[in-house]
Length: 84
Image 1 (tube, rainbow, N blue to C red):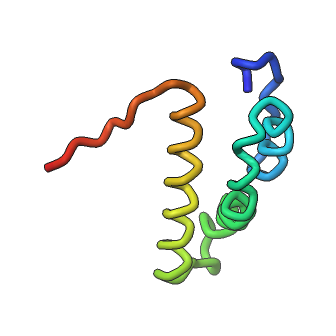
Image 2: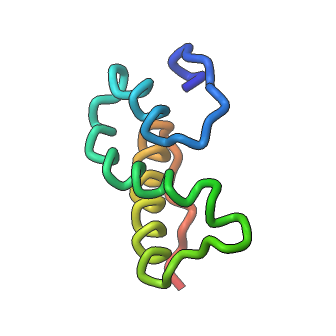
């Protein structure tokens, strides 16, 4: 966000952050559903009594990977993965 001159708000709400970025990066629009899903895990699952199932965790991981790939692409950062 700083790269396009926007202040970075302190929030766990990934959809709110996406909303700020969409005017400058409309290609990110497709991430909304996954970011909404990820936002649900931002705080609650860090505390006792709230957990995610393996299926939820796998889905969250996929959504995070898509968001990470999109961010790296926008920032011109190559993938750090190596084939082993």
